[in-house]
Image (tube, rainbow, N blue to C red; front, side, top):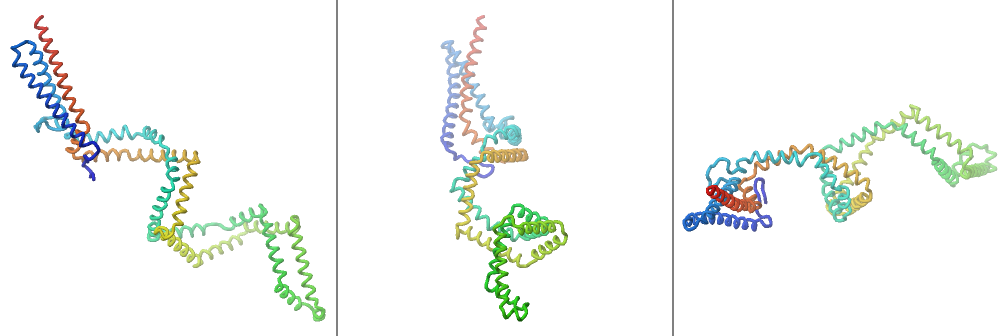
Amino acid sequence: MIVPGTFSFDAPGDAARAAELRRVKALATLVLAATLALFITAKLLLHVHPAFGFVAAFAEAATIGGLADWYAVVALFKRPLGLPIPHTAIIQSNQHRIADKLGEFIEVHFLEAAPVEAKLRQIDFGSFIADWLRDRKRSDDLARFALRLLPEAVSATETSGLMTFISRRITTQLQGIDLAPLAAGTLRGFVQEGRHQGLLDDILRVVHQSLTQPETMAVIREKIRDELPTLLKLYRADKFLVKRIVASATTFFEEVRDDPQHPFRGEFNRMLLSFVDRLGSDKAFADRLDGLKRDLLARPELGDLARNIWSNARSFIERSASGETQVLQQHLAGMFVKAGEALAADAELRAEINQGLVAVLRSFVADQKSGVSSFISDQVKAWDMGQLIALIEINIGKDLQYIRFNGALIGGLAGLALYTMELLLRLL
């Protein structure tokens, strides 16, 4: 496990790169030793033949070039031979300045609004979300995860007093509703759509059925008998009157039901519209409705009903979260899949999601980029530079060692060229 300020050297290929670095270092050192030996040998053989002068000049300059580049490469990371030479161990000595400049560079050149927005617009967030949700396994996992969180959310809601606050807010909102205009508007729309005619037909049907019930006819007959003179009772006039009343009512009900233009229907329309007008303008009606509303909201049964519903919902959520029932999880998963399918089929919605996420993320990056810069700077300052340098050497040290080869070769060629020019000048 990597902890802040440390690095892992277990990445694939690190061991091979470290071995290759050691091999190239040894080879570069061997080249330096070879040029030095060649220089000494050429100097010793200079009296044998003048050509050894050219070899000595090349080897001498190559040795100097190799030594100079060895010093430059080592001074970048360490103090050559451990000596406290000024301007060496450059990376270690400038760790804090490098950290600040790196953070500033990232903030200025990588987190600017324009390149960030351009990169974000290349990402199709909407399609990614749609594809993710359409995958049944992912939707199942998401539903399972959501269900695991629900019991804790319910408990937090109960213990935090949020339920009391919500209940009070709902009650306050309900108490603030003016029912009279709302009821008047609803009834007016009901009448304008003609749905009250169906209600009238139902009322007439129920009244007719009630009127023709034997029990109802017996009660009416008894009332009529109480009002009739004794003589008419002897002739059973009460039975005749009941039959006539029922027959007349039946005929009337059938006429109204069969005739859409029946005058009674028009009277019923006028009665309802008159009631709607009074409901919307008469303060007495409004006061009665408000009183009814207050009485209803004050009923303890309403609170008991709400608590019972909440308790049952909580129990169902807990059973679903424990896996006792799969109904809610399957419903949630199906809902997520359908949402993904709907999103995949709606290009306009995906475009809106992409645009919204780009705006949100662009604003977030703009607000946090200075924090990112500070975070990067603090992280670099906390690094173990010995480990960092070892990591850098493993990855780019091989290329740096080739500088030593190039220094020896270029230095040797430069020395050879200068030696040749010197001889030519002497001959002139």
